[in-house]
Length: 320
Image (cartoon, rainbow, N blue to C red; front, side):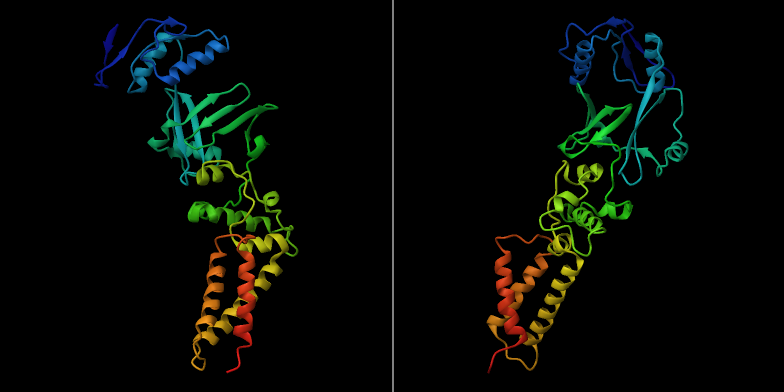
């Protein structure tokens, strides 16, 4: 055992120059991920040699271990694009320099940079039938090998040959987390209207037509793979269920109601009436709330009841 240092690297570190075979007899002070590595290699019947050393500060120090083991040390670089929507694990020889511009052009990505330190906890767990990438989300990213390709598993363990994006607009993607992820769900619903804008897809069919496989968006926003069966916007819900003309009709009715209502309640020639004003404000509150919630059976009947009474009050008026 000896302590090694160089003139270029004043930091001291320890390297045990003994080559060991198999796992250490005493694993008391070993890291959990090191023990998991031994467990995996032993379970697969893979023979291995190891060298014990401190955390090494430079690639030159790592090369010393490489020379000891008779191997070429590789370095792992965890990278991300500028938008933080794509992440890459780059493995290259320790002696090779990393050129950001060259690699970004090669893979067709925006300029790459090192991922933030808080992402260093990311782990890869090897399962019997897949790889699990633990990235701090409640749900791991699961990947399987099929027909010579690595495929991500989506909702319901569905292998994906490609991961479809709700939108390719980077500006819109940055807005996805707003309003508890509603911006993402709204964009998802709007994209599903392209082939059904006249008649819609039918009531209660949203779950079948939303893009449930935009894995980066789902994980970054919600942390889990979740099936979404409602657009969290009543007007979009109407468009999805029965078509855009139906949505426009409802909006037209509401606009007419509010125009007549404000004239009736606050017009100079009208006498103020508490009941009429209460009806107007109740319908207005529901109409505003509907931008952020769906129409549900336990409150929708009350809305239509108030709208019906209010329509009589606002458009016809009462005899003085």
